[in-house]
Image 1 (cartoon, rainbow, N blue to C red):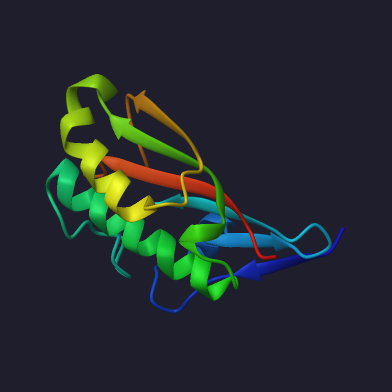
Image 2 (cartoon, rainbow, N blue to C red):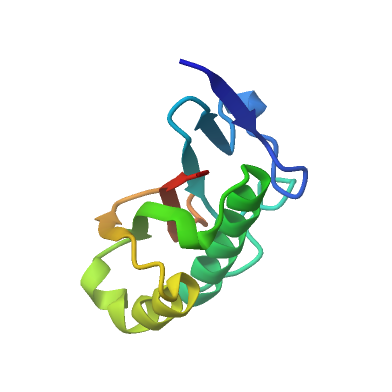
Length: 132
């Protein structure tokens, strides 16, 4: 196995918690993206709504994919974590995801959770993509 760590300077530094924004398994050509959230370099949210945080998390996902040599079109799997009942937010999330993913149409799973990285985080997005 050959692993490459990806930590774009645009995103917060995860080293304090022992994580990278993503890792690339170079032999297989797969990118494993850590949960992307709406966090500034000071570990603070910039948006207070599900919609705002979802858009910001997806923007961060795109930054990580690009830094890893991948793209939205190469996504294989996406998991969206929402604080609370997922079904209560599908009307908001559906169009945001559809616009972001476009024709890529990866496998997508939505999961309602009790908590995320901090009490202010409402949305997290993790993914697996190809670099080939």
